[in-house]
Image (cartoon, rainbow, N blue to C red; front, side, top):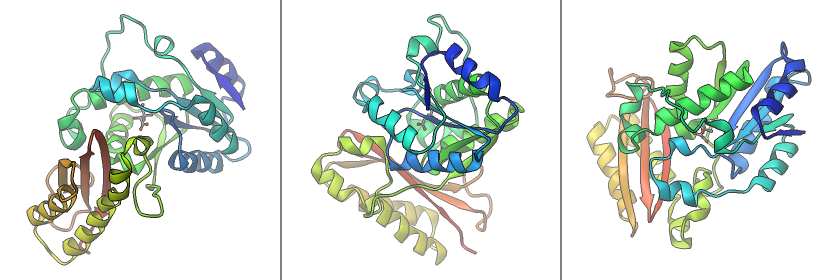
Amino acid sequence: MQTAYTKDELRSYLAPVRGNRIVLVPTMGALHEGHATLLRQARQLAGEEGVVVASVFLNPVQFDNAGDLATYPKTPEQDLEICESCGVDVVFMPTPDIMYCADRSITLEETHLSTVLCGASRPGHFAGVCLVVNKLFNLVQPTDAIFGKKDYQQLAILRRMVRDLDMPITLHGAEIVREADGLALSSRNVRLTPEHRAAAPIIRKSLLAAAEVYAAGAAVEAICAQVRAELESVPGVRCDYVELVDAVTLHALSTPDSLALLAVAAWFGDVRLIDNIELSRS
Ligand code: PAF
């Protein structure tokens, strides 16, 4: 496995392998089993002839909260070991000053899907994601890229970016990887207090309970209120949002039979966790 710290090192590595399938897994580091699953999927998709590229870059431009950026876990040595063990060919690990020019002045904003859910409470977040992913796509020129469905809205927005900007890249959504108790894996989980870590599986439990009442025909408002009440029954937990939306448009359900998404963001103390579940009535 090679590590590229600069754009030139990355381009030199990729020049001779152009023409093969190139599968990119963008990450912000602090890799865990969820990322490892994406990386193994990438290896499988690329096959023996293809190339797997992982990027490890804590993108400052997508953080709307300086404290969140400062406390985001950083484990570069372990990240490289995980990449190696998952069959990655090259890891791109730039610093912010390598990635961005100091006087950068181009922004890239999706204006429909990003106005709701996390976009409503994290101004600028998805513009930062689109910018960095666009840059990674330009640098790597992958044939395929894989993103986790825990960040469901991110995946929907990136699909829109690829579609609207005619990028010749196939995006793959990977299922959420969970702890045995149901908590979705996240780099932020290590920051939970022991009490909140013990309570956090309530997110998954409340989403599963909501899926049942949704299938039985319960009203959207009642379902969201129930999930919110369950989560906020835990001391120190405050919901940012609990919303049941159309899984494609991320706005209000157009027909009762559309595939729906129940998405949650909740503060466990000062740690913001997200999770979601796809729901259908048919
Ligand atoms: O999902 C993430 O880890 C980040 O938003 C991404 C896609 C790597 C862009 O920085």
